[in-house]
Length: 187
Image (cartoon, rainbow, N blue to C red; front, side):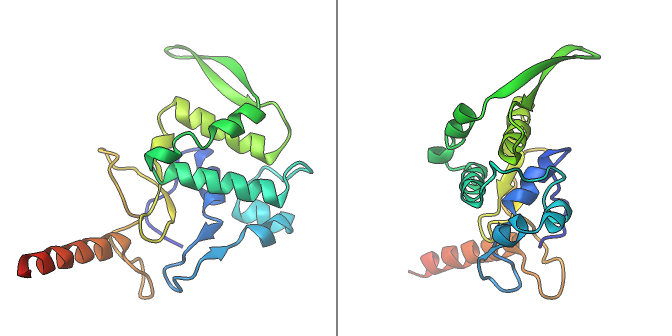
């Protein structure tokens, strides 16, 4: 698990933690899916993923599919931008108007008492306030992180390895690109 400043603001952090139940840990480089054991252990679920408990409508199959589509949209590929639309079509949200210092704003709430609806409401609110596009997955290890940079152009989970057994995905990618350029020069 990465230790850099990758936490998302507010409740969007719960979405990031849910997405990261699947990862390729830098220490082992083996795909790891923590979702099945977490779904069967409510205490571990609350500790590791979300304060929102799973309900009877939150099957493992549904959660796996949602996580896959969330990961796809965070990867930023243009063909995956619409992956969440079917989820929003089948899970209606309620818009609530609230007063703010600058006037009024709407906040979307789940209309169903399921974890899926809870997560989709968080995602919809993040889309509305332009935070969703900053939740990304690392091009190397696939770890989900929140891009805090001013330019919103971060591509990797980190540039430093974060410990003796860690990897530095950004540094590895830059070294790889440098070596490829050098090979092209020689040819």
